[in-house]
Length: 287
Image (cartoon, helix red, strand yellow):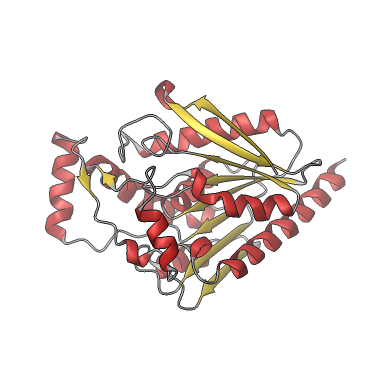
């Protein structure tokens, strides 16, 4: 497996770090990963390894304010920045990997980002995978919500610790400890990030019926960090017949790092291979 690193410019010339993993031969598909809140692309090396084994090239980038990328930790001025950063990311990938089916894979906040992106820009996508997507407001008291809305207007960059319950990430305590000890992981968030995510969640849910690319949603049914019922609601509102929902009984938030990770990697890999075959047949029929 060949590994490459680099950077590209996002919105407002923000320097964004990316890395990629390549099979030895010509890849049959490209998978572009978008990580979740507070983490970074290197936490998906094992996902990349499985997909490279299936002859796919995998890209990952660190969102602005995360990992090795520039920007205030856990802050955005507008959700559109995430969406436009992904557009720049995919433009770079299209240039490097032309004429290859392209899939978006996002986890948690990254799941929201890829679903929102695909609703706005479906062209060129052969499919979308959303893992434990953030599709509902967190269980926060109305008073705190109001405080956040006020701060978003008067002090949008005020940084606080989001108080993420790391014990809810995985039933594998080694994965929890790895997350807690990772120097590139952070728990910072600003009021503007919170209000922009809330707006994006509402818009994305409201437009689910317009979703076009093939869709796979995976979610642990014991996830307390993002709501599985919200994922199912989005899925059920998607009108396209090319959709799949997989619920993992007892699964926590990070399906790719939970005790059932091997099953998850297998099922996601098989879905991507199947959609790659469909994309190839579609291309042949057009020629």
